[in-house]
Image (cartoon, rainbow, N blue to C red; front, top):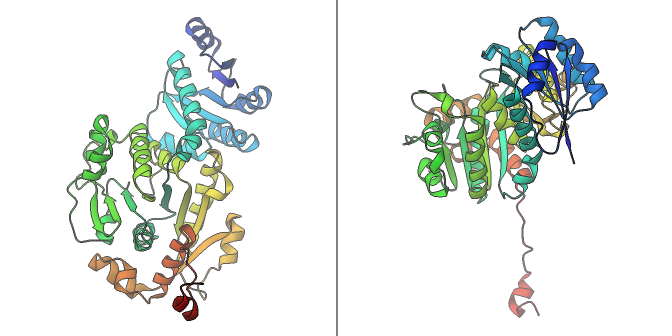
Length: 390
């Protein structure tokens, strides 16, 4: 099946310059237009493309509103911007409007080839991951301090306690402390160290880069000093994750709160995204914003799982109010258990190990069982045992 790409150049001169050098890749149909963000919706409706490349020489709020309106009206089309502005601020605003990625200016044949490669990679991603046995889960905070790191690490321990081999990956490169939630050991390597050796990446290198924290539980830690974090590119992260999925039953990523190309790649790859919040108005507003970004990224509705942490039934905001505001059902609630949770964090011991009868422990164990049900073999009766089952 041919792929369809639509290009929107900012001027007729830009279009002519592009057409003079453009070589259409095999299996791709290309339509070239002149316009700006206001033209995006009509191009998407008329061409029905798989991907749109929009020349974006200058950013303004009106342009982002036009882009967001188009991506909401015609979901499922990958929109890429070509911009001279490489800032994180532009990237965040673009992704909030439903843009998948921002490519460096100018819009030329290299941009087109990058877009086609990006589209083909995205479309083949699901089929590539099917071959791997492991399951990839991502934890994301709706607001700082919501508890995604604690839940990711302790769910990992709960899964490991069922006999599953689990890898925790800390993608909070500047302030990551996931490892401290499960052990007092110090990691000898980090995800950045592994990324710097990506050309040598194999199962042995991965095994030597992770910390064995508990039985069946391993951690690929954040760096102690976040020097040259740009070495962890989306492509390299994908290589690490795909290898990890072939070696572990579950790979659990703590993404933190930053939405940049690398963290978006982590979310793209994930089977489930757990968005963790506490019932407070700022966090609920952030959930709505994140949902808008995820819609623009084309994520399936069931991929996002909203988790309410430190939940109290008699709190100021109810679950029904959250669900009405976000138009999303709450997937799971984790009760408030301040003293037990703080003791777990301060001692570096997983909560199910430190407080096996705590209410939060019961939630984590049920959560782990939902992800990896335990099959119980029927016990023989005393008579069958005596007669050998005859």
